[in-house]
Image (tube, each protein chain N blue to C red):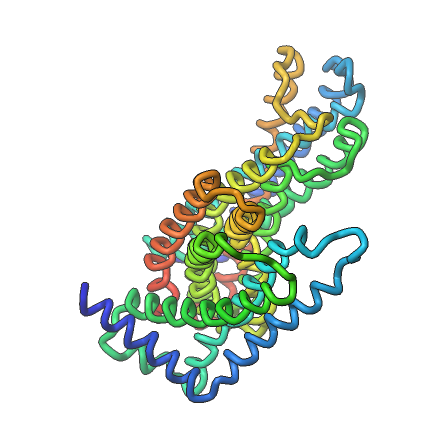
Length: 232
Length: 226
């Protein structure tokens, strides 16, 4: 069931309100990370980007997992709203993975000495990005809503299953070669002050995800509701 | 169950018979693979990179790209004259249809590989020797899984206007595990390492095959749902 245009508009307003709160929270995270969190000894100021990078990665992964799970639910229940949610989550996930993929190299250059390296986790996140792009490319190439929903659900599920395989194979690929000396992605045990900033930022990014997805979903529902059941 | 297998074989046999009558696609695919091998030979500096170093990568890029170009054929054929509607109306289960198309694609890709491999040995002066059984094993293991995914994706993308462009964008990420595994195994086989050393990679390829073949068979009916 697609809700009425009025209900969809209310969803959009709710999404925008959540987004606004999350953006204020994001401003707070910037202040918290710059002023109230000590600077890391060895990495210096470059480490501050971590409070944006890691939460963005978290939001992207969450978006991706939800696309896969909701796609499975769609094929089971055939509820059009589930499909619209999966599409919204994929779009927002693409944005967050773009943040993750741009902040990563910005940090990598001063700390690792290279913009990019074929580390297992980097490669995996790159493929997350590619899978989002493929999912959205297929959606944009199909016009019939029910067909688009079924097809993209299939891609969503297969993509989610692929992720562990890509991770395992790129991990095996790298460990069979001499590991770069500079590269040590294992998380250092973190002082409580830094951990606090990170956890707050993760909370803010989760809220940002919810705000974006609610807005995007509401807009998609609104478009469907205006289009009418005949599809014109 | 036996009936489903029989129907799958009927669908596969139909596809192969259509192919053998015209032979356009298979001949083009074989020559495409041969041309890729030739181009790749010139896409390296012979003074700095020896052919043997690059050979396994070239073999697998050729295998997978040639395969990828053939997937859309299976369903593009059915789009003409709405032939797919005829199959869907016939008392053939969606799963049997999937396995029929899958087996047809597998035979097609296998035929291209069977021609490409001797050419590869010839062009790149690779001594297969005792590596041949291992190479055949890894070819089967690496191909079986991604052909299943390719079959499912091609059934979807032929409904779009940009089928030939969207299929690679969707399918290439799924080629990562098979291609990494196959290249690793092929490199070691060609340098005379024993197969037992490669058990980890072969297991990964096997698990990939089982999981994606099962999943594709389960998801395919959702695509054919009219």
